[in-house]
Image 1 (cartoon, rainbow, N blue to C red):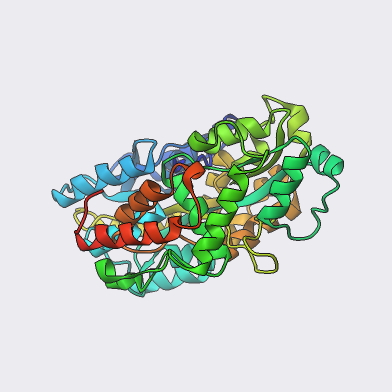
Image 2 (image 1 turned 180 degrees about the vertical axis):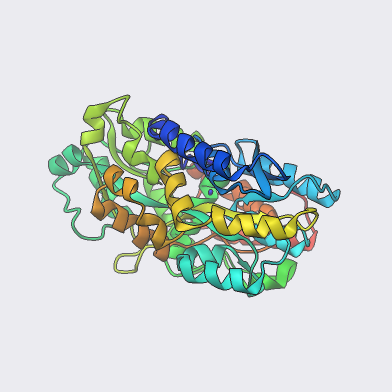
Amino acid sequence: MARLASSSTFGEGARRHRVIGLAAVLAVATSLLAACGGESGKTLTWYINPDSGGQDAVAEQCSTDDYTIDTQVLPQDASQQRIQLARRLAAGDDSIDLMSIDPPYTAEFANAGYLAPIPAELATQLEEQSFQGATTAATWEDELVVAPFWSNTQVLWYRKSFVDKAGIDMNKPVTWDEIIQAASENGGTVGVQANKYEGYVVWINALISGAGGSLIEDAEAGAEATVTVNSPEGEEAAKVIKALVDSNADPADLSVSNEGTAGTTFGSDEGAFLVNWTYIFHNYDETDPEVAKDIGYTTYPQTVAGKEARPPYGGIGIGVSNNSRYIDESMEAVECLTSAESQGINAELTGNMPASAGGYDYEPLKKLYPPDLLALFQQSVDAAAPRSVTPYWSDISSAIQSTWHSPTSVDEGTPEESATFIEDVLTGDTLL
């Protein structure tokens, strides 16, 4: 949901510990580049999300005799990334060859004709190697339009000392109600992302999807899509938010919480439960080793007891600009940049997990994460619920933020209010 807000978005990588091994990787990449003479020939410009060196490393490794891949860094915030790219693409800027695109904006860019078609053979290869969730997020109108590069997800993190004190069994699926009650009764907090930004919509989408619903249906209908927020599933999502607000487990900064603030609270004496991206496992290695040792993990909480959770999906797909002067070379570069090895290198350096099972076979990852956690990440990506793939996502997201924020205002009427506002925005009857 780069760090999505960073879906890239949402504090998903770029941690200091990820620089471990960067020098070694870059040294290998540089030697490969020197050996193949990549400094001569064409330059492919790749606009990347901010991270701690993963994209730079694979860019160097994938440069060849024919071209060098140069990186340019986009803004930190996902919506600002979208704005910068969209403006330049709409103007026909041919200096952009490759782009790291946040999943919510894939359909918008594809629908506008900004993305060069992926050759059939490469598309088949990418679909076969990628997780289903990654493929779904990269597809528009039944065509793969970007290449899945990394796929992040959220799991439920908990403090082992707290659950021992509370007596809650984390070896079986838990619900939102259960963790809210356990935290409320034992002096703990439940960390979420509920500021007025994309991260809050990520949580709402996961809650509704986990109840068996969706934000919209018939996304391919564009502005005529059916808005389904006002549903029993939407009401279940509102109940969870209201339950947290009404409990003693809501953090003091709930209405302005994001990935970073929620992680800080989780690392404090009040820390109990947290939903957040994969980087959390190593987030406290240097700052608070005792907290790092106290971290447990399990599947994302269920919205409704007995119904499988649908965790958030975040990540990055690599698209080739239709304005590029080097479309063929850029497609060749995409194949290398999204290879299992490249995905593994990127994950090692940034904590942003691979979009393929092959990427998880990268040996250094197995030294950084326990086998059961790597398995949990992969299971969660496959179970994840991408945000609705629609060219109108930016409008839909902003409308949801307007009607569901602040979380303290959410009640049983919020889904209906939200649906009406989204419909009015899509039909042009009201402005955001």
